[in-house]
Length: 170
Image (cartoon, rainbow, N blue to C red; front, side, top):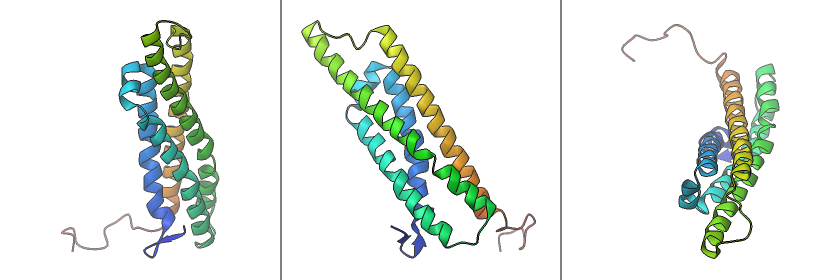
C-alpha cells in the first residue's frame, strides 16, 4: 500500500501507529499492574497489540516508498533510520500482552480449582510488571522520537516563521 486516495499512504498510516502503540502500552501496563484490568480487557489486549504490531511494517513500507519519492535529505534519512527501530518494540508489546492475557486467564482457572501454578505470585507479577513498564516506555519514547524526526523532515522548510497573510486568517 503506497497511495490512499492519491495521498502517500505513510502520511495517513502513521496516525494509526501514533495512536495504537501508546494506547497498547497504556493498556499493557494497566493489565500487568492490576489483574482486574487484565480480566476486564480480556482478549482485547493481545488483539490491540496485534493490530498495533501489524500497523508498523505497513507504515514503514509506505514510508520507504515515500522516501524514494521525495528529495534526498538528511532529516528524511534520519527519520527512516529511526522508523526501522520500532518493530522490535511493537513485537515486545504484543508478546507481553499475550503473556499478561494468558496469565489472567490461567489465574481465573486456577482460582476456581484452588491449586496448581501460582502465576499471580508476587515475584512473577513484579518481573512481568517491570518488563511491561520497560517495553511500554521504550515503545512510547521511540514513537515520540520517530514522530519528532518525521515532523522535522516534513516541515523544516515548508513554512514561514512570520505570517504571510493578514492576522485575520485571510
